[in-house]
Image (tube, rainbow, N blue to C red; front, side):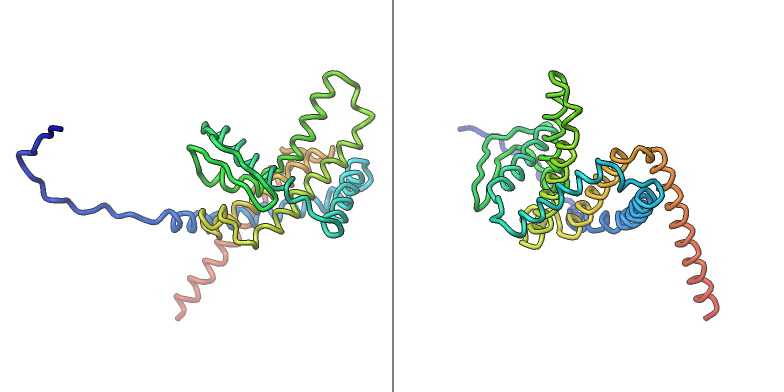
Length: 251
């Protein structure tokens, strides 16, 4: 083996300032909190208006979706929980998002006690995807759409609404059940950051479902409500800052 000896030596320069990634994510999460507040206000306002004024509750979509939710809640709290089904969906969601991010999965393993995948890529989207990406609900919609290409599936629309209700309740209950169990997916990304992202993405999912389920609500109308609430929130912050500055000046 041969090697070249350098003729001159350089003194080591100053080390660049490094900031832990978790600190950056914590700050990002703080800036996401106002977005969570605005979207929460918008969702509950639009949902109340759609339910009371626009009679969303009278549609068969609402009733069969709600029936699916209730049936799953009875099963979740009254029957043995299908842990293998959840773990399989959890790890499969990781794998799907790895592929979406251009990565490669080299190992996929699941069991009742847990599972894991081995991949060449990881980020917070991949790590947190199972907590906001309702894989089984999307599979139900995809299967229904595929069958619609060959058969008349319109008479079975109620079954689809019920299946979506079951799938969403499955996603919601298992997410709420697993989060307090010190999941490595959350702790490795920073627990506070992870919880904020999970809440925000699930709120985006619910808002999208509300628009699709209600003929009276459009994405444009939802966007207009969001902009109005952003304006109100900004006005409140400015007013609060002015009061604070006036109080500090008086002292």
